[in-house]
Amino acid sequence: MIDTLRISKSERRVLLYTFIIGLVAHGFMLFNKFSLNDDNDCLFRLGLTYPQGRWLIGIFDDAFQALGTYNVSLPLFNGVLALLLIALSSCYICKALNITDTKLQVILGALMETVIEVAAVLGFMFSAWCNALGILMSAVSALLCIRVCEKQLSRKYVIISCILLCCSLGIYQAYFSFFICIVLIRLLLESSTRNITATSIVRESCLYCLTCVLAVACYLVINSAFLNIKGVSMTTYQGMDNWGMAGGAGQYVTRII
Image (cartoon, helix red, strand yellow):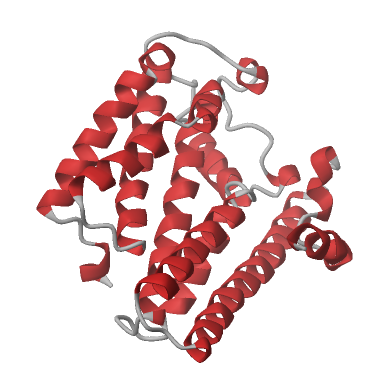
């Protein structure tokens, strides 16, 4: 696994180029204080955590409060850290998709840094680095799962992939679709570039689905445990209290169709 996650010398250059692109693209947000919505009320906390199912952010927040290290929504520190984590994520996505051309790697990294969602995340600066960490966890989870399918890693690493995806969901549930996109793109690229049998496609698809199911199940169990420990309930805002529940399965099937 260490070899899989090791960043080569050429990839470190891509990481640097991507990071610089991010700094140029979002310099205004880094060197000025420009808040969106919740950031005005979350200068010293990481926001509404457990009631939104974001138990991992809640753990970070509890730890910071216990240490007396208050997150004051500093744009330069939080923003730079977020952009660096996103740049690192792009390196792992390139690994997952087997993109080796330096120009294509930089282009992918540039897209990762400059999409409008990143600008929005930096508007909620108090949790910007947390969200970027969630992206990184999801990307690494997808990479490990893909390497297991390629038989470069043993099947036990599926467990680590599930844990990382579970933690990513504990930061922001939307990163579930981020994982799915990466593995689907990899599967499509693989099926179009080499002679792969239908059986292999089905086998890989089943492994990806199994990872998703286990990660979501683990997330729901941990989330329920933290809600009970903290004595709070999930907020109904944007349907967060129904995320991942069996009752909403019909909605997921309809969307897929």
